[in-house]
View (cartoon, rainbow, N blue to C red):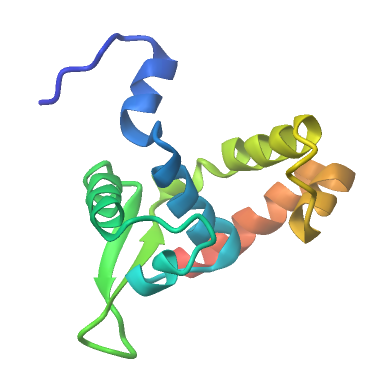
Length: 135
């Protein structure tokens, strides 16, 4: 069993998904519908291949992501969120809202504008989509 830095709930959470890359991978699956290694590499933040492999493995080991063989291409893997991963949705939405509110260089895009108008509605909408894809 891995030794934690402390028993603080924030610290325990950060031990799992506390780097920017893990949160961006979760965002890409959750809000942008990305499923594969190659799709994650296309993200605007330009994650390095070795970091991507490391974070995917860590998120899978933490039971946040599920890795499966693609039904369309047996030589390709796809990733999806587990229920534990889906439960991060309100946190991701709050981080988006906070980032847009306090950083002028982070404009609100389509989802951000929806969040500004009806945050609870956006969360409900994405919960419904995400749970549909895991059943």
